[in-house]
Amino acid sequence: MKKNQIDFITMGCSKNLVDSEVLMKQFEDNGYKCTHDIKNPQGEIVVINTCGFIADAKEESINTILEFARAKEKGRIRKLFVMGCLSQRYKKELEEEIPQVDKYYGKFDFKQLLSDLGKAETATANNGCQNPKSDMGRHLTTPRHYAYIKISEGCDRHCAYCAIPFMTGHHVSRPQDEILEEVRTLVASGVKEFQIVAQELTYYGIDIDGKRHIAELVSKMADIKGVKWIRLHYAYPTDFPFELLDVMREKQNVCNYLDIALQHISDKILHAMRRNITKEETYDLIKRIRERVPGIHIRTTLMVGYPNESEEDFEELLDFVEWARFERMGAFAYSEEEDTYSADNFEDNVDEQEKLSRLDRLMGLQQDISAEIAESKVGKVFQVVIDRKEGDYYVGRTEYSSPEVDPEVLISVVNKRLRTGSFYNVRITGSEEFDLYGEVI
Image (cartoon, rainbow, N blue to C red):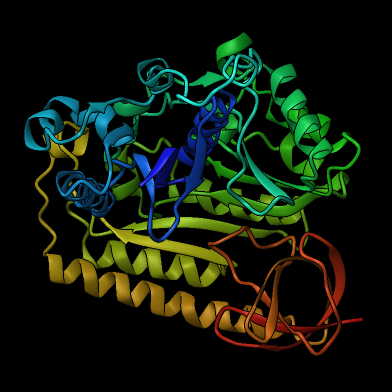
């Protein structure tokens, strides 16, 4: 057990990761040493940043809390703290069920943890003073060449199945100048690639002056010297700001990549989900995106097994996926979240085995599409950033792949000595179901 060391564990999305990174920097400014997601935490303090999105995520967070509660009982750690979405929503229940945790924090009061713990016992007068700009400072847990930028918090959408607004509150945009200054600071520290994240990316600015400013923000980011790639995550399809596509097409360092969750295509299901978009509008949206940005790679997320989803509704979804040929796609089976509109108004009446069967069929179709898209890249040349060396390969990504979730490019180590964080022109020599193989030219 290492004195004054805090081991952070982050569950869930990249937005949670940003919160962990901010808090880690604040602790380091106060004399602590911080580690993140190491296999065998050795610090005297553990902080778990939880996810409460769906049942599987909640279960994983609870199991992690229980694991470290047992470690505390055995004396392997001295203090245990929990923060994030799960404790934002279920703080009272968690306090009753897992009292071994020293204190629970939510999504917005977690910085109080710093005051509660105080300065590290070894902190000097200088390093013990909290940096007044530490809200902008972060301890990057990603490879030093890329970072996540969170441009807003919360969500004003009211999708029937989603509990996120209960945990994150109303949409609040960060000031544009603050975001741009953070990008400049990170560029100065060596970051070249930026993943722009928000619960609802395209809503940015609405709460400030009633207008969408996402295109303006991304354009200004792209103009910052040293920004090599910008990639956009978590757009919403309704009232999509098409001027954002113009920025993507015109700015060479804005990746031709868009993460936009569509959830379903059946009008009946979209209406029940309260998505405020129709089947026809969704088809038109995909057409317009591909027309405005030729070669764009679209990542989406779909849901199966929503209440009252019939076989006909599901077949519509299969037809849509076959037509859209998404370059990246994830899917999950509906799970009822308490207090949501769908939980209060619909019976969870699709059999669990049927949900899993539909999920398998949908992902099987996408697997074939992904393999065909990967194969079509063989022989072509792409710019690739190297993320790491792993075994006999350097592992990198094209502009069409986000870290950790998308296909990678494997380059044999005998090909050439490559540097992590550097960009190379790579000819694709082979493909598998998802990943590609290539050689530097």
